Length: 556
Image (cartoon, rainbow, N blue to C red; front, top):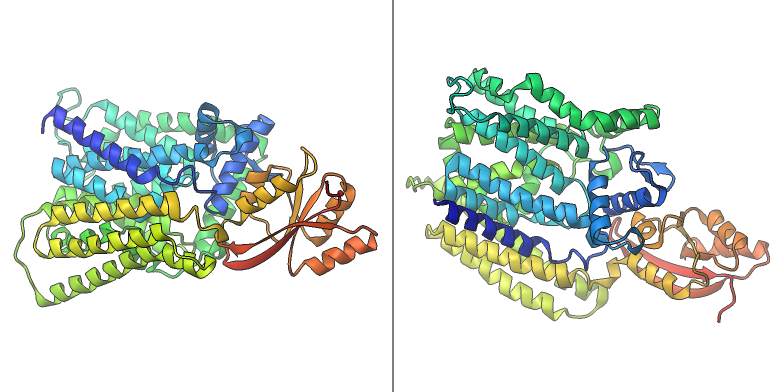
């Protein structure tokens, strides 16, 4: 492949990534509690001028290092303003991280299995459901994936180079690959602590164990590489250790990291096997092609390129299966390796092995894959009908277009036209994601409680400095949309907020808390005025809510 055609392939992948990841960036409100905590903590950096000690309101966020907050702050400073609270600006690092991850997957696939496999692997990771979600969330994981892939790209280059060539002969990898490896590790450490070390050193340990050779490790240059990595992370780690008096490490390591191992934190516990069971959905639509490539992977498991990918996948996957706290994106760093294996398997010559049990197994998996695709295409139109009692024509049309494409994908794969099958599945995914993220989800008003509350507060606030006290609705997204002064409190706290600031205060009370709230106000001989009512579903916990917005100030 010429340089021109290679540049063109990367350009096409970048354009595909943008087409997949941009829809919904600006139209979707904060998507979950974690994203809102990240965006609010970044906003408070600007408010306080403190870019070291990270906080959500008055609570320290000692869970991860500051890397992602700095990236988000940079994006907001360049593209928006903190007071605008435009969530799309905070998502830019995730968008760029996901796009870079697609390009790095192509590069690694090129190195391991050749140019066509690299391109195909990049398409599979780009259309994966989980990466599309992470690309639209102002969190760590899309950017972390890019740093993991940068380290793995350097590691693969060093691993596949001859170990008998002395340095400086031109036959081994340049020293720049070792530098890139350690710098990528430093960047990953600044994002999510030791997670990148688990992925990268897990692969190194398994490679050295299975091959019983360590000579290639000398090319990593740890004597100066480790200090280079530490030079990236130590300044902030030392600063936060002093600023927090050691509390950062006690919380990040003792509570957050070790706590996830021993207990299912935040109701996210699940038994071993969770990630395997979730894989058909999280890697959809690429999970179909990964399953069909399994015989190739098993047959070629001793070849260096396949071994590298398997050693990349196995340690991380096993560790996360054993940890009690589980979230779908935890094994995302292994998905590019799976994509590379799937692409190589699809491009490998057909061996003609048609064992009956294997045929039945593949048909069963294809059926599960199709059912998942139909469910994904139908989910939002059905939700619109159930929650809002009307038909969404865009959602229905999308489903009617996507489902036939999925059926055609299976027919193409059955007739051995694997590349066309991937293209068809990618087209279905592109159509589904563009419709869901840019139109269907933003228009499903029932679940977007925080934006609707913020709009109600904007209409009703009697003063420019009005703050809201709320109970029981206490989502971080409401703090991000309304401001740091928003009070997440109890019934008495809501009542006291109104009594202390009758001219400008607002209160948000749930149906179950309304009676005790009104009793407290009656005891103070104050009669609050109902100014708005917001009903809907808190998708974070599935609870149906009936919230009333109160004021004490007289109406205009």
